[in-house]
Image 1 (spheres, rainbow, N blue to C red):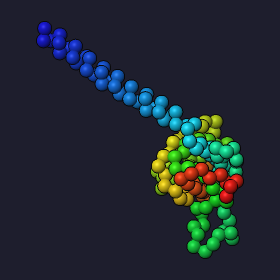
Image 2: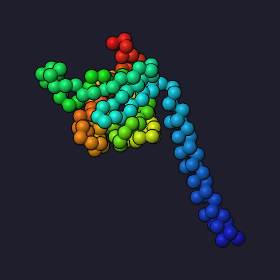
Image 3: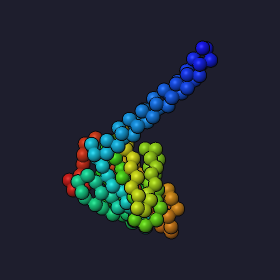
Image 4: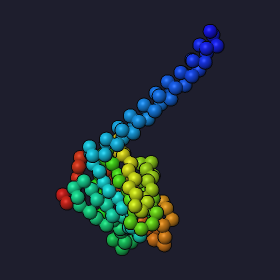
Length: 164
């Protein structure tokens, strides 16, 4: 009798743990997926060698690196763009590419997402302090790879580039 009991316990207990893990994993995936349409959703498309940004308002901009002659003394030369991406303190970022593999990286936010042609990758970010964050392409995508920065401006409320 004791042998049968041990076999049943050793068969049932792992199944319960697996069921708990699967339930938790699926509920987490569902929670992340349901956050997409709730706040600020930004679209980021990699091109050779600039980013195209689109915000929740439908405005689309080509974000290119600022030229050296437009910068003030003391401003970082390779980190700013002419059209920053405006987001709230919580946002979803949809990332894709038009031509080759790109990878957007914003180290201060701990953000790194691959931009793959024909595929849309999503990342949800929350709790971002207001400020300007600089990012760059982290994939060797060609000759202009080093000149693909991205400026991300986070605000506590929604700011449209049209209102600035």
